[in-house]
Length: 113
Image (cartoon, rainbow, N blue to C red; front, side, top):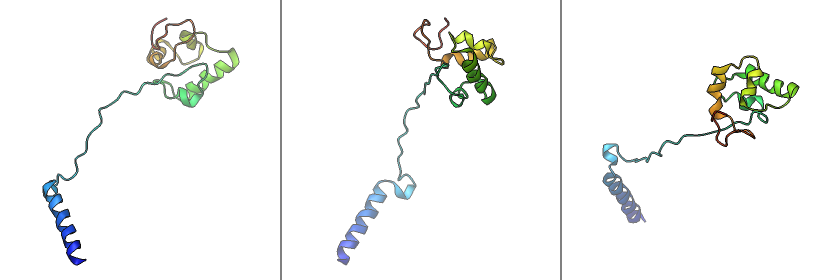
């Protein structure tokens, strides 16, 4: 039994040396290629926690969007977001690429109607 343990230990040491363990190169980690994550938000369905993910939209503005939708009805198009206090042309253009296309608009999100 002792001989088997010694042979196993010698094999492990040999493997460790061959793999570069003595030089600190034992672990070789392959890096995955970076990926771009794309998301789109439906402004007539999203709740405020989802809207906060949009650039330039904080919690207060996101809650205003939801409240405007609740009181005045659904948004007809992306430009209709301008009815919400705090959303100007610059804010709208910053979030437009992340808005899901609406019926009657181009099939691609972020496109200008």
